[in-house]
Amino acid sequence: MNNTFPHNHHYRHVSSFSELVNTRFQGNTNAICWHRDLVGDFKEIVAKLRLKENITEVSIEDLAVLKLSEKGNLAREIILQDIQLLTDFGASPSLNLLKSYERDEELDFISTDVYSYHVDRSPIETDTFLCTYHGPASDILPHHQVDQKILIPEIREKLKKLHVGTEDEFEIFLKDHFFDLHYQPKPNSTPVNLGSGHLWRLAVDHPTQQVLACVHRAPVERDNEYRLLLIC
Image (cartoon, rainbow, N blue to C red; front, side, top):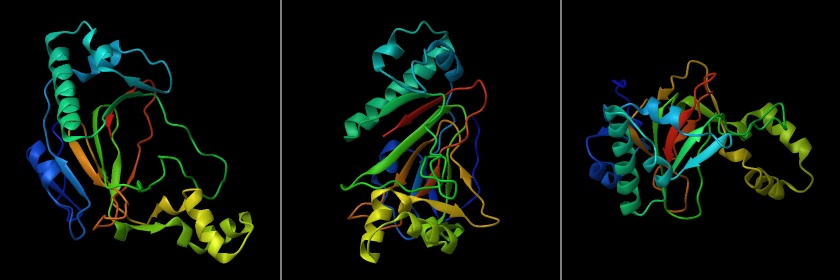
């Protein structure tokens, strides 16, 4: 789990949970990483959990009943500690065992699923926290390396053909269907992978946000490998 990241101005590293939650987003910085090299066998936990659906929420009780090796137990303690830290902070963390997310295949020219680069939006002041303990991790991109899909002329024209109503209503239509949240990487864009074991805080689009929301996407899963992800 020894992940290193190139220096980049759109995210920054911190060394504690306190720094993670108290460091302000500012300028171009819209992602903050509590960089950690975790010990413990997270793969063992994944192997002993039972997938009930493609996205299975794992409860604290589900974790508690697992019979684990010493390294597996270390991993469990780290997860429980992260859940406690986030809960005490006022967040509502969810531990998910993931086979895959639902795909959006309705339109062939624009996708609105989580595999597409997108930002999160909320009517209230909040941030997105996530940590991948096992399996592939998400990618982020700075805004200067993406184009908002609804502003790409050929995509916009196709969306206009779908819409029935006035120009003002068209903008509402784009928001109602979440088309405005999705982005297309520019040629030669360089995604930053969030890596394993690091706890990230990503900026969300909400009324009091001072920076642009963080553009990110879920990874394509590997065959026969589940992801273990903490998110809130």
